[in-house]
Length: 636
Image (tube, rainbow, N blue to C red):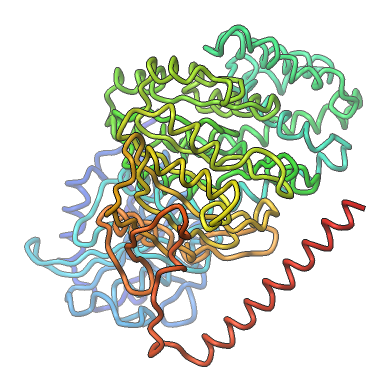
């Protein structure tokens, strides 16, 4: 790489706010130098004006006085991170660090930095830094971020210390704010590609397989390097399928399953829409592969170990309306991560999911375990080879599950394609000694099918004694006091301990068009529920997610991390919090939910609370009536 010189450009001093002290700038330069900014040939530090025409144009109307050009004290860019700009605004007196309202742009450091960020965020992710003080022993630093295309800014990073450029970029990319923005873009793309494939007349059930097949093929370095150069659609399709086959053949998937997996992708070679031999047809397929690489793999590179394939599966099948018909309700990623924390998964855990679906729990568990391995390569390999165990019965879902694990380059060895009730439980238990069970069992359709609690018992039977099992299921399973659910509850308590139950958000599965109200049940395997044991119940109805048109439920206000922390800590400490959690001794004959035992503080109720409750009750009854009418029409 050619050497890149540092650039310092000074604007007309008449435009430079007089309050900024030369000593403050000198101190900031010294601190930046100590963090490597002036020794990194990839970094450009500019003052008051940028030689970058794009940046300069964005600052044309960014004057702190309200008219004219803006002149930030320091503008920092880096060739490694072309989408990031760091702005630093200085004030000599720490009393002029930040105003209460953050909108006194001329008079305060943070306020001014945020003004410049609002203009630059039209094209860049911006880190806005307010810096004040003249002495190395007494200065203030505050950090805010404003993401590209966003109007809001957010406080990020620890105040009081400047970081090096790589730490800033890493912190930004791993932040909740960046994840939410990128995840929302991924959801947008699922809808976009679904509409395109609908026009192409590719059946819903094949769409997720097509996308997963493309992602597998892109793992093949030769295909990734050459796919844009194939002259005909036939050559492109042939090499696409051959690359999928090659990746599956060299994977550690059991040989007995490879033929079926490869056969599942054969439609790619015969589907007329995919094999459109026109120039337009070839261009579409090439563009689809390119977009999968940039928009899906790009997301996976930045945000590792997220179950991306399930997002496409949910979107594609929402309109076919057969995900619920199969009883398949895919768990949102923020809930799979929550369960991993509730179970306190670490690098020594062995995780079993006997209803693995597309692998959401296994992917999240792998992420948690690898983080705890802290770079220990041998430990990481052992985690991938021995500490993730999945069982999936449905052939199509199994194909997506294997695809998901291949996309993440991990954990395929111990994924079983079979009926969990036919699994040799003793052999599996002896071989792996699972310490954590996580599952979202298939939900009964119109009351028909295997009871959800039977899957829980199946999972418990394969865990080491003292292990934790967490399952998400319909609330009806745990509040029934008669019938099959009651009998299964009684059976569970005979050899396991009910540690906790979380009442989950009512519209948790809104993105899947499933109205099931759910709960999370936490059990300790192998120990009969003590007669004097008090179980913890949490009213976890509000996860901070809100419904948005065309996006489903999203973390609009970025509040989930704090909410998750509250839930996890409250359970681990068995805290009783008014209006949120309670401890209660229960039996199989009793309801297992917080609502049955929490007391209401009527002093805090308002007229609005009453009105909203009545509205919610009316809408609930209306929804139930509509659902019943729909079922009766189907029966007819």
